[in-house]
Image (cartoon, rainbow, N blue to C red; front, side, top):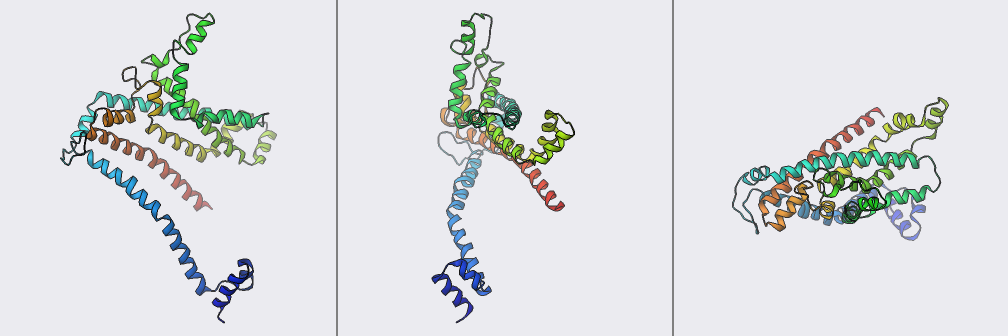
Length: 326
């Protein structure tokens, strides 16, 4: 009996572990088995690849194609070149939406990172009821942006929310009308977004802090370094990859911001909180302008690529550098 036949017989009659112990896998049997596993994995992943190619890449390419046509309610094959893009960037509403999403994105991402880091540092001090506080801080992230928007719309409503409650206590001059104030409405969106997103950063940062060796803390305490300096000079640099991943997730959410705007302000007052995603949806379903909507969507795709690609490249270079050092 050949070694391969012995291996197959033992595999069928005894445990695989016993068979491996008595007879190592012959080379002529190992290669076909490896190829068979690779083929099985390829077949299992084939539907996912087809979905990725057809649904994502295919529809993206189709949308980009429509952005060069004069499509309105239905798709058209009439090529108009860059006319839709010229019309897009001549629209004051689109330019206002880009300005608003830039303000919202910078403040939202930086606010979530800062508040999330502070919450993680507070919980990292082994306080009592840590699990309870961690659940409370993370709970807003479990809500949808629609629910968050409705909650903060009520809280910031001058006639029903915080302003009305404070004035009912006797402080008649108190004003907190951000949601209806043209100059402050975008900051009301930032406030609601940070309230929801800071919990995600907190969890990621806290997990990174728990992975830092205790010897570093002991050495810092022996040297008499203040706690705040330990977090700023020792802990924070080691959380770079974790915070970068959290920032990437938040930045991707900024590009497609839509739900919270519709729930809180519906783009108002005026165009004070108009964002690109809402502009696209309004032109796609409200004004039946498919060509202009797909042009805006294409610009958003380019925005996502230009936002994520540098971060991914920096992480790749950093990983290769670490690998080279090792």
